[in-house]
Length: 387
Image (cartoon, rainbow, N blue to C red; front, side, top):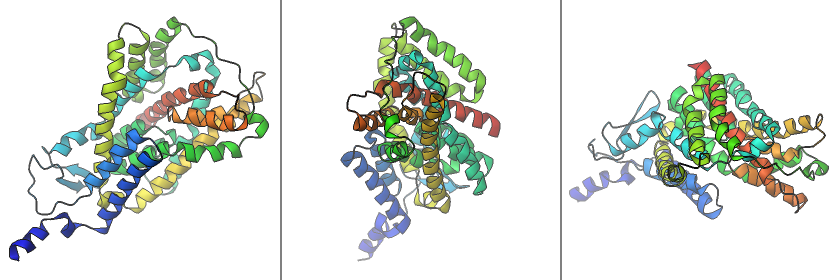
């Protein structure tokens, strides 16, 4: 019985807390949403499983280089034991390595031709970033410091890698909550955006048919990533890593001479990095640091930021229509957030609910990819100003 009692003390049940149990349930809910509702499964399955793994207590186990779950909390930041497996995996998050690699893959799979064919739609991607800066001031009002507010505000860009990158640099102790909030709202794009889009538009506006985009030449596609990189990074040097990898990946795709590299970047590499990033972020959501009043505030601010960003794009499209003869369907403005391509698909869905013959997907991709660039620029501006 003594041996059995000692064995029980070494099990996870002996050290399981209510917080651990809650986080495990949250992880399981993420997995269920991914599988049953198809909400961003490539993100929510690794994050959900990581949250389950990261909240299994391991009492009385020695801190060894083989221990995958040795960790401590230092100044509110989860620190895995140096030399452990999780310390190596999580260093890609804490050092900001994974997000630029994901941007490389995104660049290699992104077609900027719709944006180049109708450059004025870039303004919708810029307008959607209003959610970032309004939430920044809202976070300051709630008592967060400037660095924390900057990291929270970027959730409104609906760009998980950018949110993780900025949080790792400005507020690493909030990284878990910010990452979970950013990816949660990305996954819930089909739920959050349609009510806002319908509320801010009339049926007549939703029925607007836009002129088909012109055909973009291959020369334009090749020149664009180089020119865009120079312009955007001179405006926001802090975003040089993210934007550099994004446009480098796009150049690999459009140059037509490095297709093998582009194919690797947009398939195997981005898949591997997504697995490591999602699992590492999920594993870092320890109940001790995640289940706090700050986390609840971050989730609330994140929802507000995302809603404002969606509304900002729609309202700016309506404003542009005051001066345009060739009208823009205001629904397209909702794609200004950088949840690629989910926001563009939502625009297509809402538009076809009004008119099955109205095809808005290609038009919506223009502000959608512009939103990716816009959120990276916003992150670069915040990083430059707040560090």
